[in-house]
Length: 148
Image (tube, rainbow, N blue to C red; front, side, top):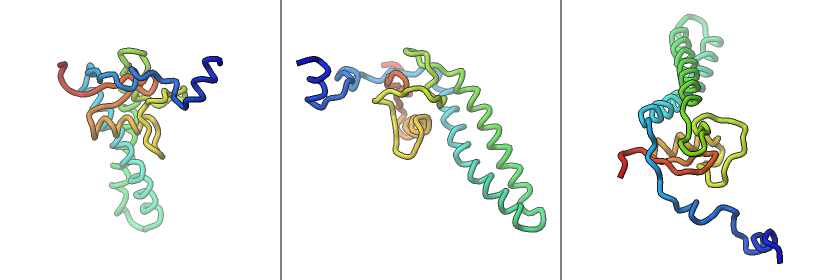
């Protein structure tokens, strides 16, 4: 029996057991990583706000919604531009990929993925709520905190 048919027959993934259970590494430059996550959340909140305020500005008369539209649009643009620049500068220590920048590359099977969210959004949410995330390209687990 060949190797490929035996691995398919027992129903196991091609990912090694050591890869699933490896300990999380400490991320160097944690301040930048947290800032990227906060800018991403700001972008996720500012986009629907900008759409809502723009719609209200167009449908109602008067300048009541003008200030809110400008504030939300400015917040959206600044958070997108600064977040993208910082995400492009942040590299994984192992594979040198950009784990906080969404790309159309093939992702690792163990990467953080929440249904209906992108890999980047899933990594941001995992980072904010648990203090941990996996690189979407090499699946190396990272954490915030001090070295042990």
